[in-house]
Image (cartoon, rainbow, N blue to C red; front, side):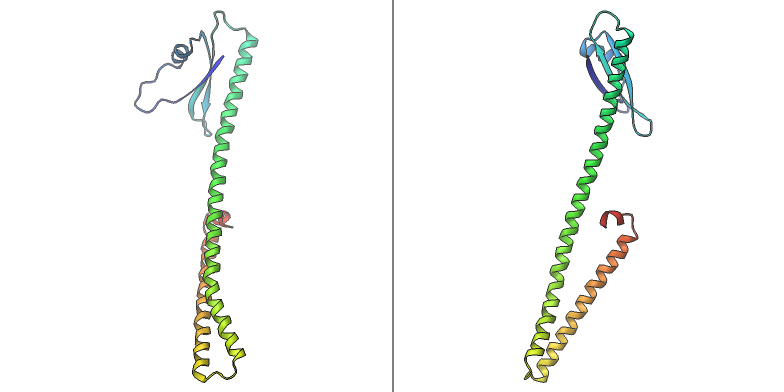
Length: 173
């Protein structure tokens, strides 16, 4: 027994009668075929079972061959679904990697202004003899870096709002 799978011929090509093609390729005397359909029911090909013997198969053999063809059809459908799920899993892994990189960049960008704020505050607390100009410079630095942090947090919240309003929200979260 030989099983062949043939898809629909490309548009514009001359289709070869399937039974003739199967017989010529495998030297078969008997051909069993079951249509292969897409999810929507559209035919996409034929799964053939070939039997190279001189006498006609009996009813039991015919039933077994048809059951085998149906099982092969189900196995191919499962393999196709597995491929789709594998592709989806790879896409999700890629998105997770992008998310991780994004969070690392955000953490890095937030560390700089926080370090400046912390350093300026520490100087203001520890150095009581600072002149007024130095104190003003440090306080101005704290204010600018606070504005930077505030802007970055606002951008992140805007990004979160955009993501929650779109179709990709379940993937991002």
